[in-house]
Amino acid sequence: GTVTGKFRIGGMTCAACVNSVEGILRNLPGVTRAVVALATSMGEVEYDPNQMGKVEIINAIEDAGFDAELIQ
Ligand code: 9UX
Image 1 (cartoon, rainbow, N blue to C red):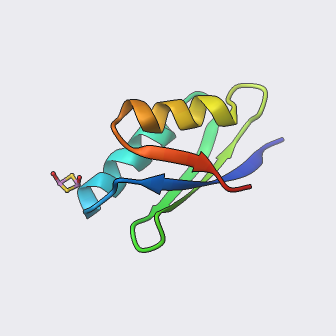
Image 2 (spheres, rainbow, N blue to C red; image 1 turned 180 degrees about the vertical axis):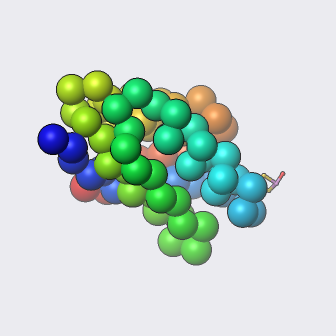
């Protein structure tokens, strides 16, 4: 099964940032869906919790130079 995590992502200022973050998320092992919205600074990530975790997702976003925190 999969779970969905909602993250607040800081530091995105253009559509290319959004594409960049979405690409990073979609390339993570176990991620089946990733949608990022510039207007709300929110990202929704669906993933298999046996392959991926909240902390790893946050770290991947922060490694790309953005801020990230889990909302729920
Ligand atoms: Mo363009 Mo978005 O350099 O940070 S990718 S503003």
